[in-house]
Amino acid sequence: MLLADIGNTHFHIYDGTSIEHLSYEDAFIKYAHKTLKYICVNPKIEKKLEQMDDWENIADLLTIQGEYDTMGVDRKALVLSHKSGLFVDAGSAITVDVVKEGIYKGGFILPGLKAYQESYKNISSVLDYPLNTSLSLAHLGTTTKEQISYGIIASIKALIDQHSKGHTLYFTGGDGKFLATFFEEANYDETLVFLGMQHVLNKG
Image (cartoon, rainbow, N blue to C red):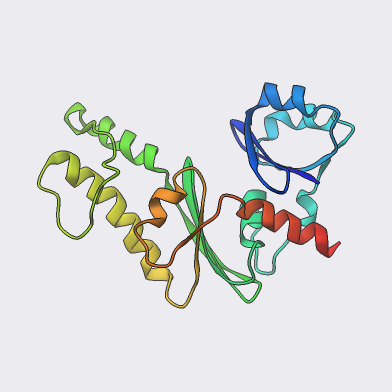
């Protein structure tokens, strides 16, 4: 079964073993006559999706006790991947959600790593530095570059740590693998959203 997680800029298609990342145009061409089930967070392409006879939107199947009205379908799929845990999706925004015994307990949303970097750049050009990917939080930074990276990562980590007690940590998203390295026993899995979709479909 082909599953698609359609984001704001790309298609992510899972065939049960690997994930393919495609532009909208390439996905519509390559999978036009394939049978797939999808979720989508971009309302601008809904009309195009409705024209795909072999594609099925399963958003209405994704529900979890405790969810709120405007909760994104991708976040619902993510938290349905496991019965309990703290779930971090680190993409253009960083979403953090907590589930306990199948009940959604709440969460929070932070800017993504690129957005954090842009915010420093917007303050002053002298703060325009790339993220230091070899950063250690064991000691404070001694250069502007180190201090910016420390401020970004340490603030994100502190807030997640505040709510992580007693929870298994699950990370996904483009920056999820990197962020997971700052937490002990964190689990990075780029298929989490698809696992949630599979869970719902298998129940049906």
